[in-house]
Amino acid sequence: MSINLANLSILKKHLEKYPHANLVAVTKNRTIEDIEQLLKMNISRFGENRVQEAESKFTKINSFYELHLIGPLQTNKVKQALYLFDVIQSIDRKKLVDTICRIKKIDLKIKTRSFFLQVNIGDEAQKSGISIDELPSLYSYCTHKGLNIDGLMCIPPNQKDPTFFFEKMQMLKKKINSELKLSMGMSQDYEIALKKGADFVRVGSLIFNEN
Image 1 (cartoon, rainbow, N blue to C red):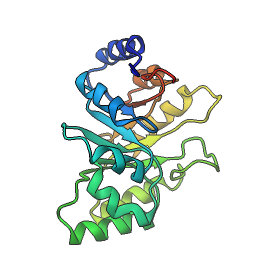
Image 2: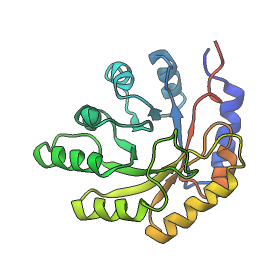
Image 3: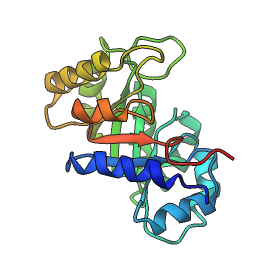
């Protein structure tokens, strides 16, 4: 079995302490069989980094699931993504917002109903996301365009204590809209993220046994 049952049990116990929090099981590079195993364990919320990989797997699954895009989105993949994902967590520029809004106006059959802004919380050149300084402007632009933003997402810098960055996300949320959800925390730091108010934790490697 590919699923690490011991780690998954620990993860579930942590989540039980935070009733508002949700697990997004990251299935990047995992098989359809892995996903189906999780579905049998009543895990139905999944995260994928790439549109094409997600399409190759999830269009073949008939069970109920909620699919999140947690990786960068190119404008030429927007229509494909809107048909496939329930949630897109990686909105980070006006051009992307414009493309989404244009497609939404002419096609009412799209699947995506929830959008998050990705914040480059550590101001890292190699990472996607809107800068902290530009975040209020992008949020206002989305509101003006009629794109409802439900949350903020971040990936803190590696090799640094994530506590500071998760607290900063809380501050940004309160400044912009206290009703926003927070997607933050992965396999190595999800416990800290939960303590700092994460509504979604994106956990992958911790759930699976290495082949």
